[in-house]
Image (tube, rainbow, N blue to C red; front, side, top):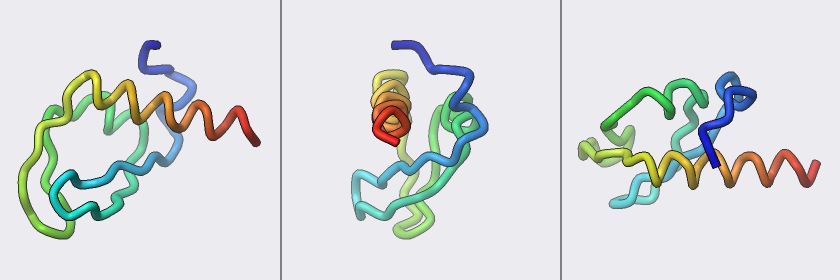
Length: 66
């Protein structure tokens, strides 16, 4: 699956792998960012293409169930 352009304007949830804090970001932000700093624990993490695909797929499936 590619990073679907129809999801770029949607709010998506990603979780910090260290503290598990949920953060809401737009799809276009997730698509373009290479690393992010957690809002909770302030650690910097890489966001790989595989992780981006998983986030987009999770939201695509959630939209399909609506």
